[in-house]
Length: 153
Image (cartoon, rainbow, N blue to C red; front, side, top):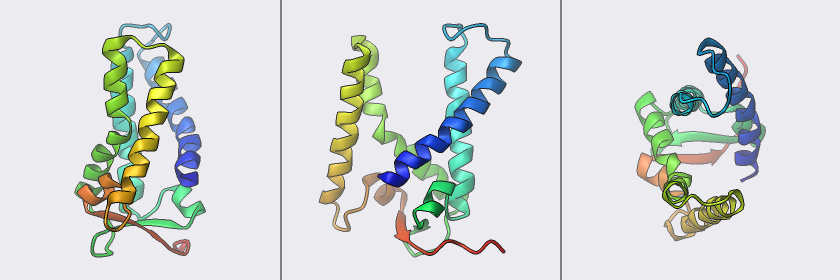
């Protein structure tokens, strides 16, 4: 989970640059611009490119820091298709609470409790997997392993 939190901090920079680029080129004037849904779709694609690119190379920067590597079920590097499948399946961490927030117009505090509650429940569900693996990894055919940092050569 520490790697996940560190990844979130790194993604802040990715969101900042991508959001700045989108809003500058799209000449968005404020956060309530009618094109904000296009911005969200753009960020979804940017995140996908970020994760697929790094996962096919074995590690994101946060994963390198924590000596974690991602491989397929046979221990081989991920293909782009498998990395994309993992990216899409990883949204299970957030989509259910986000889907529940939208129709009920929950407050910020209620939304936060719902999101963090779901993330905690989803993380605990990994204990029910035979290999104590997160379910999106099991469904995507990927595994996280401990490894020494990859060579820089």
